[in-house]
Image 1 (tube, rainbow, N blue to C red):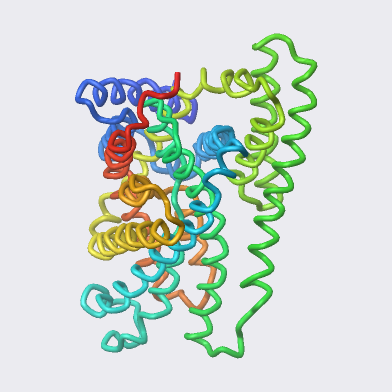
Image 2: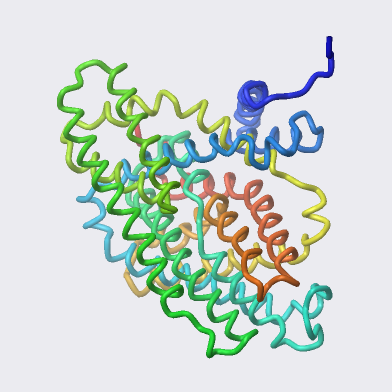
Length: 413
């Protein structure tokens, strides 16, 4: 009989949930956000090698996919049309300002500091021009903001109000902006390397537009379908099965069609919350699952911590993190001033735009598919992954700080 013990996927999920929950309880005792505990426990799991790297880096992807689908649905459920109309001007103006702010600041800082912190993989390390393609792409990737951490903080502290609505809407729009910015930046960067005669306008503009439009259409169709079916459901247990099934279906179809499952599920939640008058149960049945979902998602996110990545690209990651924060913070201030947003939005919204994860990592990993970046793709990917790790640790307390400063914590029953 073979007594060699190997951690399998189901056992790994059990470890992540149980140990992650204890981390959450400990964080709460220390008056930290619960997800900070999940992430720290995930980092400990990574450093202790309890779970094999092959499971963390791929074997448990279904947890991430389903979690992001549920998170997208819940974010969409917080976007009431009446509220969006009221704050629509602020959202529409602040979003491009803060996203472009991150793009510009990261591009400039990487460009000018690159020669001092990156000496490998660059054709001419002494020339600032050699760092421009890398800087543009890293800047574009930095425009994205992850909704998962922010939503977890919002729900943990029962936050509700103009600030929270504006924050959630901007985070979702950030991901759409990032997809377009990434497509444009790659073409510009490749053209700088190989010559502008190779620029692809189709890939730059049409492809991301199709992705975003397709995601919204898919979410709309499933949202109306879920709204219709819910009329015939009387028991909460059945409603849970139908809503969860719709979310899984949305995630699966999105992956098959290479669409954004977060955006599609957000659209579905948006349709449901605005089409059904008494919609509490449509989201309440999922709320009962959120503790286990957040525990799995954020503990697994922390388990992606890789000390070698920090060593390889730590300085560049710190530069990206600082530049991104400054860009978003300045962008919020400028956009808020132009749109005449409330003072608390202008002052504190930037603190809620720190989280980066899913879309950021996905876009970063695509870099290795482009021949023009073959020599520098490794340092770029490692820098982004390291910046994600840094943000996962510092983002939750900052989001909590913003929500409490604007006085919107504890409003949701």
